[in-house]
Length: 479
Image (tube, rainbow, N blue to C red; front, side):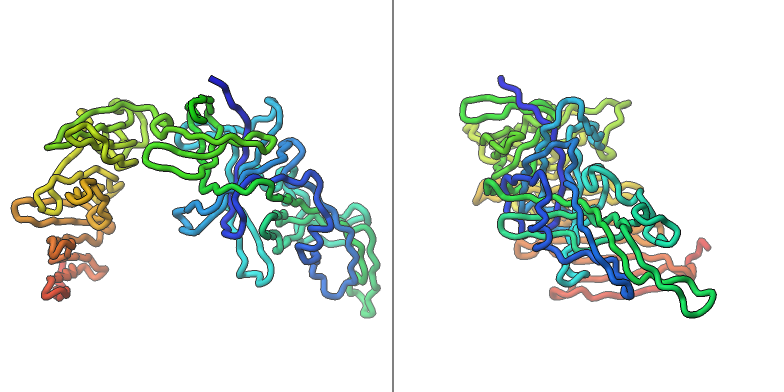
């Protein structure tokens, strides 16, 4: 088995205009391109005649030695729910350079991630990118903010030595085959200055003319090989990477640029530091350590690939009441033919690692009810429901049922109840029935404790498809 090993550093840019693929990073800033792509920087001293000598440094930094980058597009971010692009810098530095970051999953990875957003509205014709968390990539060579305060006075510094830090709000540019990142901070040196003596006694002299030298960081990325990358898969452990029948080894800290995926495999490219790549696939199960349990229900067999059961004294990230995490559920028919794979369905709650099966839509077929989360400080625990479809012979995720908390399924009354609590002052109870194949709320009661030591109870009943509500306010007898 061949071993593949590199250091990487990654970033995330919230955009939609960048073409995904492999990019070449300029070693030296292209002054002509930067001048063409951005408006001249100005210190905004309205009454001063200004002259500038513009200087740029490579934002990537000499220590990193990254000459190529991988860019993906169309990945989704839950917090912003918008398309984003991820940038992976291919690091050719030797083993002396190590930038290890310990994540909550306890893996130590050989890359540094950074999330960016691009603001193209606030500054009208300008585009401004900025990071959520600075962690080593942005202003890589130095931190400009540590050089000097922004509110400095020229008169208290000698010429050629005085400097300050200003902000540039025009820091992002992109076209079809190129994108540029500039640092927001600009170090401004005063090379020479002319002062005008005040005409009124005791007034300070006024700066009339100045020559500045500006120092700013920039990184220019030029598209070399367009590829339809949709996301980046960070490798948490040693796994097999298959190119046909040829097996390679990827290690903790490596990555795969994903081109597509199905229920069993990630397909994509491993990119070398010189921009060359090989295409292959990684089995999803190889990314996790776990056990497999088997469960038989009616005419189906379930093979459940899950994490190793926790010990009583083990400090893990499982929700309260969970015994193990489900990585995959494979469903087989009575002829042992696999008909479906369900990924990341939730958690198992018993040490025998079996699924809870119940007829949640009262159609005579058993459905899957899988523990999804606890209620934290409150009782708002929930389950993921997978409803069996006799036409497709598959279990389909039901979002409506899965969003209910403290859910109870009464198969005799053919009714579903749910409850919730919003802090100590409000809680609710709901009843549902399946009407014409749709889960419908038939009753809701919400109790709220007010600041006037009163209890407000709102009861709503479904009448001919509409909820009719009644409010009762009573004094809290316990106060």
